[in-house]
Image 1 (cartoon, rainbow, N blue to C red):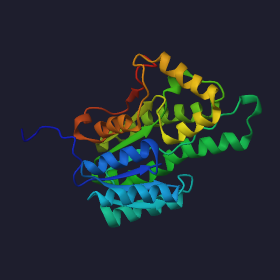
Image 2 (image 1 turned 180 degrees about the horizontal axis):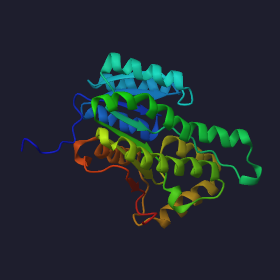
Image 3 (image 1 turned 45 degrees about the vertical axis):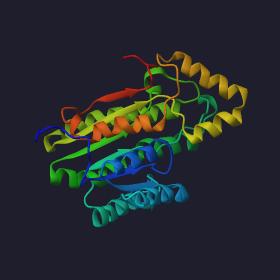
Length: 260
């Protein structure tokens, strides 16, 4: 059927933050497989360049920018480079984030500010950088990565959950603000994802780490670990024509931990 919605992203450019590993890497690789040009943005130079190189080796289009989402000037420059080398950005995946643990009573201002600046202010910087061209083009897909923890809570994570809750509010506000321009803004709340970084963290904690992971899986309806590629698939749905009736929504992908 000529009007059938497609999952393909041919001719589009996706700006993906935190794309050097984990969910961001999986999303960059999947989007590239579906035809999108990829701006791989990450402050991990070796990881980010490796992802971009792998995409190009597989016949895809990708450039890497070594940058921090806290630096608005670097973000703006990255978008300008994507415009010049890949075409205008039609898809933004705000994925970059950190998740350090700290109790509230021991948390410093610096710890709080770092998490909020990267996880929430970084989303603002990247969205502000691409929104004008989406408004001018009258179309775009913005996908913000939040966390299942906004639904279930977690100790020693108040700064992290505050930042991820802010992303949901930001998503809803922008969906209202940008809807007249056919710009879709949605969020994803992933569960406990089995990334390489998490594997290292669990291994460092020894038995306690294994027990914490087992407790999370036990709360899930589906008793298994969630892989980065599964979250990438949700992002692909939100980036494609298949989700054209959705905006301002939050998709929970956590194997049935939080039911709402």
